[in-house]
Image 1 (tube, one colour):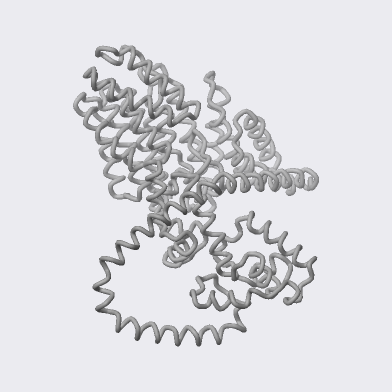
Image 2 (cartoon, rainbow, N blue to C red; image 1 turned 60 degrees about the vertical axis):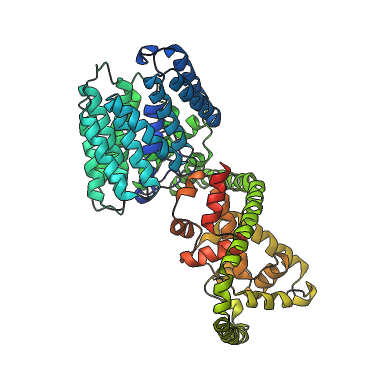
Length: 564
């Protein structure tokens, strides 16, 4: 459940949903770990070997590139640094560069590659008895396993991380890194045990408070940053309407503690931290029906967002502001923010669609070519088995066609009232194609009505409402303020598909766009992808995917990974 979603912030949460069950998955364990622990500048004194200054310069250059979003350039420099450190027999330098390379692969969503590199990090750190690095390593591996669906192994890695952290000699470092592991264990238990989520959040808070404010090994800013984050998460935990431990008073207490630390601290907390906190407070006070405060925090968030450009955060804030103003009876401002929300949402959908259109066609072409090669091999190896079973196949096919023809005959009059989106058998589609050659005039719909329906369909296609599991022809006709016959005929003529194929096409295009534009989606299970794009059945999703792209989802994902 805890996954890195598109457009997350550099702190704990992305900003796309609002309830505890939706908001708490924004625990930002992995990328927070990367920014918090991985890409810090180092000093030459930490590298006791020849050429330490040069290695330091290389790593710091990679740090700068990473912070500017140039991840692939940073990766190249780190790979060259590892090679150079090996040639100079500088184990500490090799460990530092390899650790950062592992974290970089984690950041771009290539969890399998990151996990493979982590084996080398583990060996280097163990040989140097670097328990701090081992603690960070096992914590990262636990998150990687979680993202790959290896939940039992993820828990084992967390246990190893705790063991390593307990061996850290410096007390303040030991408290800090142990608290951080507890922090990441909280999202691990989301969906499994609400009580354990709360337990580990409290354990994290308890441990990090032990760190001395005057510590020479753990900067006070790092301590406070983690404390702000855990307080914010506790506020979200107690806010949840579905949580048995819901407590609005405690929720507000933890939110205000986080806010007080941000406001009173002399440290310059990054804008992402403030934005996430203000957005959490906006949602909290809207839930509490204190709409004035909800509006204040929403406006604060938008002021900061101007310098950060986080459109997904802005979109959510617009919506909550529109609702808050409406609740106060200020219809004019409510409409203003609702319009801003609608325009931004349309823009986001349009940009996402445009950004992946060309690469999607390229990937589909390449995967189709590879699929043909695989098919040829399969035919050759399966020829003998095919001959042996040929007689039985003929009998089965004839029987199947008999029932299929009967099904087509009896379902023609009921087709327009189909209540479930499902795949249409090939023979049925061919039958519909024969009837789709009629002219616009023949279907008895005026040109004005056709134009009206096409405009409505375009908006429907951009809205994402085709992802609804309960969608059917009747629902769509009601949604577009027309009738089932008109909708069916317009889709048939202007989209060259029947209703079911039309919906399947939109859904598969949506999920292929996600797979291409966001590497994190490539690590999800097929069942999750199926649910994400509106299918109740994984099997139906796989069949629909192959029908639209020519390959299975697994094959498609493998091709994307090979391109990287």
